[in-house]
Image (tube, rainbow, N blue to C red; front, side):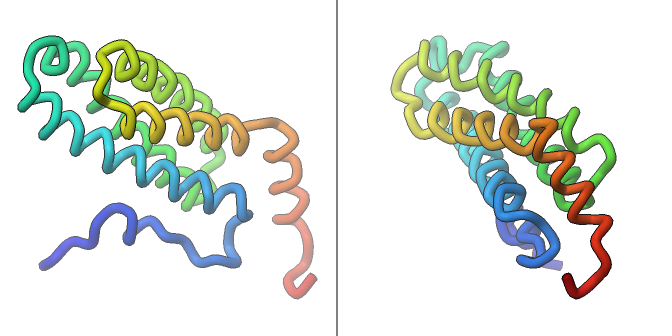
Length: 140
């Protein structure tokens, strides 16, 4: 059985989620892919501080929480907003660590974008709008 890449698996039906949520899911997929690739290729090959265990664990945590947050958003989990706040926190720490090390601009930017979009979809007003939209009868 051939598994689809995460970015293809997690693409939700366009009418089932808000534009902001779909954009966040795409950013999370990108951040996941970049963190995994950077950690397993660039950091290990570069060595030194890039291959520091704590840095590699942070990148693994970032990738894992991005995938989890994306899953929760697609499922419309009752905990999606809490997970998105945690995801944003971890992505911001990962971006800062990547910036400090240097030569990791792609990872830093992917993490920052995912963090910003997670903060946006976890904002209380966004949650209230989604709840109101979910209560509308079909066809409206």
